[in-house]
Image (cartoon, rainbow, N blue to C red; front, side):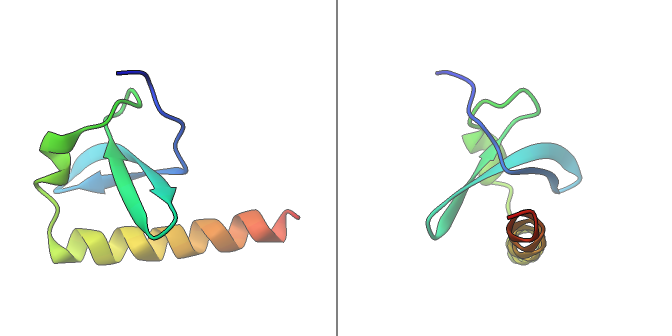
Length: 66
């Protein structure tokens, strides 16, 4: 599988990762940009809520640049 572009960096259970948002969902990538299903399985409700907040802040910052 090829490396994926990503939107921002985050953490899942304290493990560094990258996050790619597509429409209404997101994909967790490892630090090298490859899909990490093993890491997605570790997501908690708190991780999901935090990542969604990080995405909101990221989106606002991107929109300000345009």
